[in-house]
Length: 577
Image 1: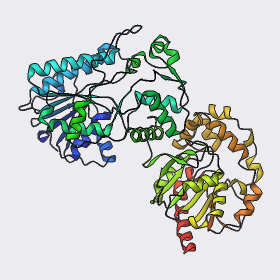
Image 2: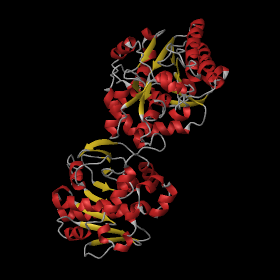
Image 3: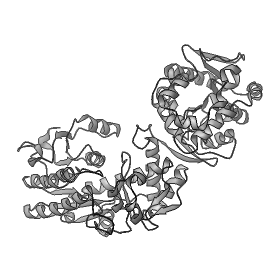
């Protein structure tokens, strides 16, 4: 789209809020100019992944720290609505760096909007703590970020009044959603990794949230309402639990232990940063303050903008944080998240209702190890981290009972594929529930391998697993470095996972003879798969060897494994029929 026809300018369009707002405006039929400082590709790729059409989008390069935003004087002549989503959001900034964007840059936006022929609205994003900064005892006042937001808010309001720019100020709380990895997310990161010995603040500490979807819908509606001009809106969910309960909710959802201790903010401010691990500037957000949300709630009701249940929103965000390793990697395709399975908070990826393939991993990997194969199968798949391993919590039941509970909602008859350690539970499940699956594929089942191949595994310790590097683990497994190994190493850093993995390695092969005998009792089609350098004992069953592969053909030869599974599906469906 030509920039001359854009009716809306979004500054900071490549940021967490900005790109989501661009998507919402485009869905509403607006002609959007998205202002970025760098290349357009990250924004356009993100919009494509979100399924948003870009026919009404133009991308322009702008810099709010420059007068005129660095745009040509005749640029964007049809723009009537301007959103300033550009801000420097970080703690530990120096004051000059923070002011350049949050004060000087924000004023430049006001002045540029005043040059429009008939501006309808400037929407300025501020913060919910505006007007709340205090120099409490033992505290030197707001840090550079909060001080710049306070000054920017005041200066923008004054300059807009001087230039008769129709202004609406949006003061959001902590915006949660896919892509948000700072602020509250850092506390959740510490909680997940067992680095949060105590909850910061007291029982009444209120760290409110608002979902990204709710916030962007709210923003998109503001220029359309003449009554919103000149108004300030505090946009947050008043039902957000107090911080101890909020962290308790995330802990229960993800299956980790929530700390019982609490540390008052006054004490936190006296502790050295090396001990707290937090920038002192963050402590001013640990407050019991409440906020004037009535006007925002009334606006949302008028425009039919529903507030999603905060518990569901926090759970969905926690799932995303864990899926992306708190922003360190990309998330698998949804759906993914934690589910209660046989008493375990189990990490599940894929279709729990009608999968064509169910995929179970071996040690020390997780469900992510199936991603290369899942992407090639061309059908619905279901994978899960085994109980007590990967991201899943332990269960008090046998793994085949856990598997039965995992598959209880499934209405299809999937092909069940298991790798290494998971082969035993898969065999026992198939014996009990042959009518629930179309067939069974066992990859490198340890009970069909010679004992010398398994020597030494009992000597692996939890301490060694916690310390193992990605390169070392890849070498031990005979795998190239990559996402599957990185994910395994990240899991081993979580409390209890290394200990349970070491225990599983020690006990995984105690029922070899029984499993070999029971394999012959199966009443479903069975395919055995092995890498050429990781052979199996002969059994008389269908046996496929993957040339050039070792113990993990699904990772080293995903195309071949996908072909084997698709071929097994065809043969086994025919056998069942």
